[in-house]
Amino acid sequence: MSAENKHIVSYKTFVSVWVILMFLTAVTVWIAKIDLGFLNVVAALTVATTKALIVILFFMHLKYENRLFKISVFITFLILAIFIGFTFFDVAYR
Image 1 (cartoon, helix red, strand yellow):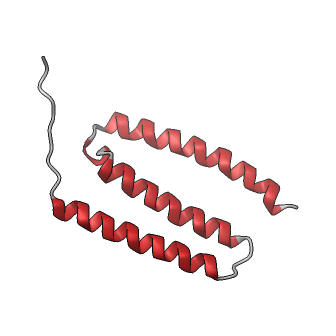
Image 2 (tube, rainbow, N blue to C red):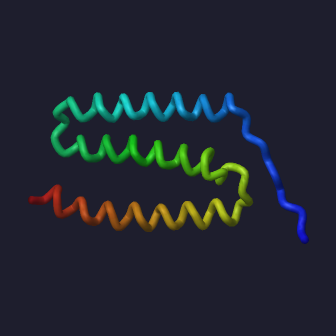
């Protein structure tokens, strides 16, 4: 049996992350009420991506994983972002 690298995250960290996520949710609602044209989609996806990154780092404990695993997760999300970005070319040029 190998020894696992255990880490303990404090409640203060979890509450701080929760407060940040609630703030970003309020920012998302605020952005939705402003007419930015095509930039509404970009702004909403930027906030959503930031929220997803925070959830992955803290609640899914990616912050405490080794470097190779972090790089593989980053590459996966980069490929996903490229695919989503290509679909927005269709929306932008209608």
